[in-house]
Length: 192
Ligand code: GRF
Image (cartoon, helix red, strand yellow):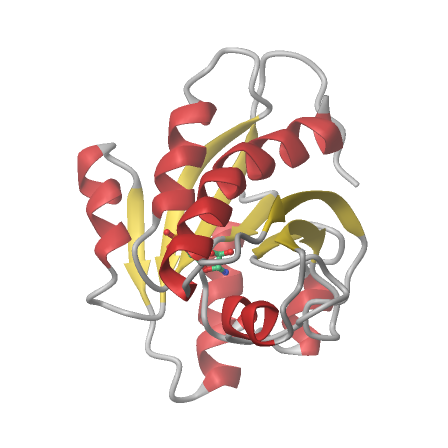
């Protein structure tokens, strides 16, 4: 794992597919002097991802990739990461599954945020599943990405109480709020 020592920040790329509220939040934190990472690159599989606006707003380099040929696109992404001297990748609402080989080439340096208390509810529709099972708690997890989906080492988790009258919308909003605290906290934990 990379160690953070001193004022030089860890060059980070954030991968998004949608709204990008976690991206926006990480950018905000990255501006703090003592926060260990800088956001230097934004990558998306979706040209219409709302979050791409933060690339313009904060003058961060962005690149959209078409994932129809995964092997090819991953090669291109890896060389872009190398070219930009990226040391850490943060997945934030990125809806594509990266290949084993990509993850191995970037081993130990990819983080993800997932909206459940892993190992419970890997994959999609986590809030619907928590509600359907009448769980008392749901939450979110920041973990290292390994070649098995949503299964790498857990860095931090936050429990969120499920209310009786919760809908997917209300629960996901409360969890997202916690995600915005958890992701920066996990990065601090890893590198400070
Ligand atoms: C978050 O709930 C994240 O955990 C999940 O997708 C959502 C992305 O939200 N993987 P945003 O794009 O960061 O607003």
